[in-house]
Structure formats: structure tokens, C-alpha cells
Image 1 (tube, helix red, strand yellow):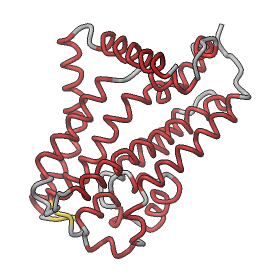
Image 2 (cartoon, rainbow, N blue to C red):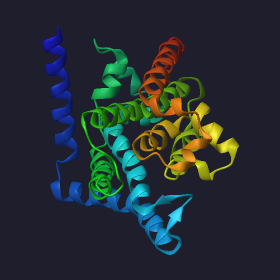
Image 3 (cartoon, rainbow, N blue to C red):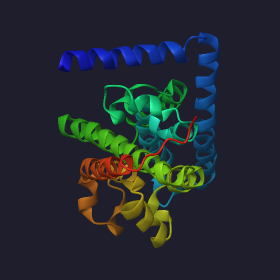
Length: 269
């Protein structure tokens, strides 16, 4: 059974890659377009810090490292969670029904049947580039411990964002349309996460830590490695919690998903 599952995953991913990169020049240009679109925000920070030198104690290389975690985790996330990102359209058109009829778990299919490779290459490529540029300039002592922590932090960051996608996808079962809510809870919050959360009002900090925990995607992992002075405003335990928050939020979202499926009613024709 396990071998069959792995073969099916491989087949899903192979088919998805072929469909997205069927027209190679177009695929390359669209991936570059995503890269340049996301890089615009980093370029704006670059020119800002050329004038002001730092942002609440964060210098340019450190800001680039902070951004690298944000883009890298999203690049990985979108390989597996594109189906959940676009779940609302599937519910409204009734396309989700075809997955119900297949002899595989619904969440398994949502994760592996599609991947936005343009976004994955654009975001992930930018994240890797920013990491390469910044990692050697921010004073991190790279050793086995820090490497393991970094890998776990990236995995936790992916799970946190995956949990948000799964939660919002489940809401589509009840509300049909959650586009505005997704913009508010995920995309707008993600824009705030591009900056050290210490520069924001306490209300925003609380929102990004306890409600939509995007601070654990990049700020606290970066703080573990950089130890900037503004970390003094937060409990030190937060430095170690990204994998725990990732696993916990994903489990809660999964339980909500299982609950929501009981109330799914086809809206297609």
C-alpha cells in the first residue's frame, strides 16, 4: 500500500509539472514575472535602508534574511497547498465532487493533485537568492545545531501557512466565498511579516503571534539565529516554538477540515 501511495504521489507530481511547463518559454517568463513582482518589495526596502541605514536595529542584510524565510517557506508551501488555495473556486463550480468520488483521501488529493509551479519557482527562487546573499553577512555561526534548527523552522513555517490555507478552505464549505477573508487573514498579514514585528503596535503584534501566527514563520526563527535587541520585548520561549506552532495549528485546521466535510453540499451542476 505504501509503495502504491508513493507511486501515486510521483505520478501526480510528474503530471502536474508537465502541465505547468508544457510551454517552456511561457513558463519561464511567468516564473520570472512572479520573481520580479515579489522582488519589488525587497528593492523598496533596499533603497529605504540605503538612506536610513537600519529599521529598529535591523540592517539591510538582516532584513534580507528575514525576507528569505518568508519567500522560501511560501515557495515550498505552494507546491503542496495550491489545491487548498484555490479550493473556493472548486466548491463553487462543483469540481470538488470529482475528488469525493475517487478512492483516495480528500486532503491527500488536495495536496498532491496540483501545484502552482510558477509561484513556487518565483517565490522559492527569490528566497534562496536572498538567503545566499545574506546568510554569510549576518553573523550566524552555522553548525549542525543551527542547520537543524533552520530546517525545522522552515518546515514549521510551511505548516503554519498550510494550516491557514486549510482553515480558509474549510470555511468555503460554509461560506462559499472567502476571498476577502483570505486577503485579510493571509496575504495582508504576510505583508506585515516582511518587517520586524517589533516596529508595529502591540495590537498588531498580538494578532501576528496569537491569531494568525505569521511571526513564527520568519521573525522568531530569524531572532533565534540573529539575536537582535528588539527580541527583549517578547518571551524567549517564542524562539523555539515555530515547529510546535506549525504542528499545532495544522492539527487544529485538519480537525476543522474533517468537521467541515460533514456539511459539504455540492453547488455545481
